[in-house]
Every structure is written in C-alpha cells, then in structure tokens.
Image (cartoon, rainbow, N blue to C red; front, side, top):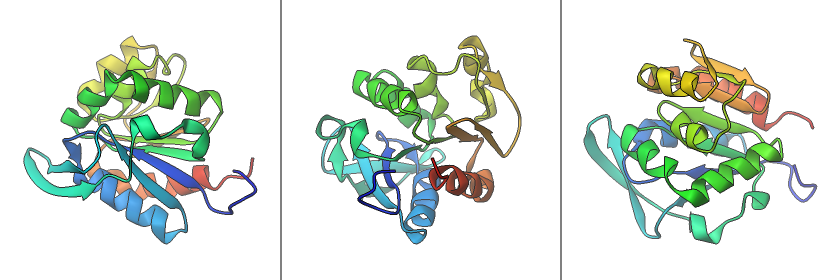
Length: 181
C-alpha cells in the first residue's frame, strides 16, 4: 500500500447486469473499514444492477476503464452476476487491469461468476478458488482447482460462491486487503 494513505484504495469493476448485493454489501463493508472504493465501468453515467434475474437500482459510475490504471489502486473487487461477468471477460482493458493487479501481487476479491474475467485473462493456472457452481468447468479447463467453499484464499486472491457467502467473503477480503506487505 502506498505510504500516502493508510487504508486501501479499491477498484470495483462492473458492467451492466452485475449482481447488486455482490457489489453493495462488500463496498459498504470496505467503506466502513476505511477503504476508498471507486466504482469503475465501461461507460460513464450509471450502471444497471440486478437482483438475480430482475433489474434493480442503477449506480453512479465514478470512473470508466479508460480513465484508470491498475497502478492507482491497492486492491480490486470483482462482483458477479452472469451478464456482468460475461461482458467483462471479453473487454481487453478489463483483462489488462486484472493482469496488472495480479502481476503486482495486489489483492483481488472475486465472487460468483466474476472468475470468468480471470479465466479470460489467463490467471487461473495452478490457482485454487471457488465460484458459483455453474462455472466450475470453466475454472478447471483454465487450469484452476475448484473447491466448494464459502471463501477461498490463494496468495493474493480471495474468491467466494454467491451472495449468501458475503459475510465470510468480507472477512477474508479484509484480512487480504489490510495484510502487511
């Protein structure tokens, strides 16, 4: 973490269709712990959240992927939601951002379908993680080891399965994001 601030600056990257609880609950938790969170999306304005299959609220975008660099952040949160994850996985800038965070050893917290971006970015070979059960094959085909657990930590990566796991996910995310380097 840069000397200029005590608490982590966390990038939260979403596309339209993200699972609302997987962004709002961890973000509220991080903010309450003193982190600075920045909501990043593909376009400026507002981004559409989902509650499972139904549209929910829209959230203001703080920055677009074009406006940020991984070097500006101490950690990354990737909420899930199938539509969101499917859109982000094919975005080169999103792939490059997560690759840069991983290469720098910065903490990355990923839940539900969000590991799809890690699959497409080529970051799962030899890693142990969890996700929503429907993308297990994608993770294993990308060289990752999938386990069925509320939260899994592998080096700089913490993963979780679904909204019901958020309390455990938040606990492990806090340990990872505030770990002394």
